[in-house]
View 1 (cartoon, rainbow over the protein chains, first blue to last red):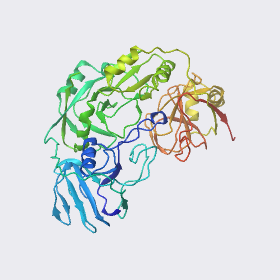
View 2 (cartoon, rainbow over the protein chains, first blue to last red):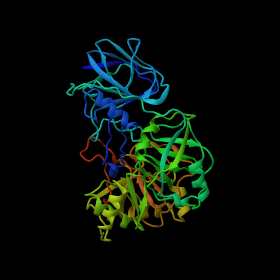
View 3 (cartoon, rainbow over the protein chains, first blue to last red):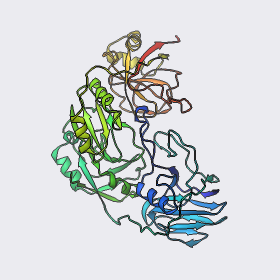
View 4 (tube, rainbow over the protein chains, first blue to last red):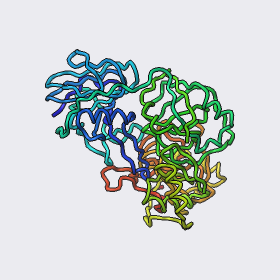
Length: 284
Length: 194
């Protein structure tokens, strides 16, 4: 039960729900960026929702089956082929022995989630198969020539189709102010909530880095390092907001002006350099 | 202690002191997932339930320690040792004596797996971070920043002022407890070499 990697794409990582509960060791949760697509891909192929998937950034991942498999692709939208024939994402697909699956460049979104009946079989580190790119914990990224091992399928394959759910165009995410909004001027908060924010090219699983107007601090001084969460919006000393992703450090020294609604952080897996993000005030 | 909002899946307890933060973490760690900061504690869960839990909890102010005592052998050969001495108005020997002469407490973890922020050291050792972080700091480097001391578990970028180095392995996934130091442990430094 395995597949072989013909092309690894720019960055393809094993992911599951991550490793909660190790913060006292300095280990962050990590885990799949788009959690909703992990649930969808696993549900379609009859896995438990947290079975190990491959999170593939952009286009390029190509794998050849060395046995008969059932796969499902969720997350991004765009061209996916099996033996050159276009296939539909968001549903279970047969990938027969020696068939080749190729994930193209997404037309919408940025990260593909590849689920496989049985789930990928990789060694767990601290209870998880996730690769933490900052903490450098977990398996290495998928590489050309790798054999992707698969566990024996146990569940029932779904006949459902899940339509792509990514919104097109400008993304608005809901934000709760705090814990350190009082470190910023009222103007800075008004700016945060009204300006369009441009996604920068150095965004990754650690953080989505944004360009836009400067956010002035009211309190000058150093914040004693404090815990941060996925979705925390830090403002660096250069006045640039960063929305923390799944591989964020456990603690950070920049004051967090607000936190993105947890449910909306899945969408951040799919923003690309040059995209626009807006923040709206969450109803609390 | 103030309860600060932190999104829809957590709250942040902002405490007056590190000891108070540790007390809250100690009191609540069995009930909800917690993450300790320098003077803060993150609690994970629905904010309304967490606020109810906090109202129903009282903490005792005494220091919470694990009882673990760790001694770390250090060669005081760091590239910033002389600069630290000058900044603190001490002789190099006095910096070493201050670093080895006080008992440190692991306040919290962060920055990298196995990186422990050591607190309660000699208050004379209070130095700023480097203006320009080094792109590469060797594993085992012993540093100072603010009134913290810390040891780099692996080679990484870093902005702490480096005063020495140790061969102690701070992080090893093949150990039952990968991190050498955990919050509440007591740490002493011992000079070796030279």
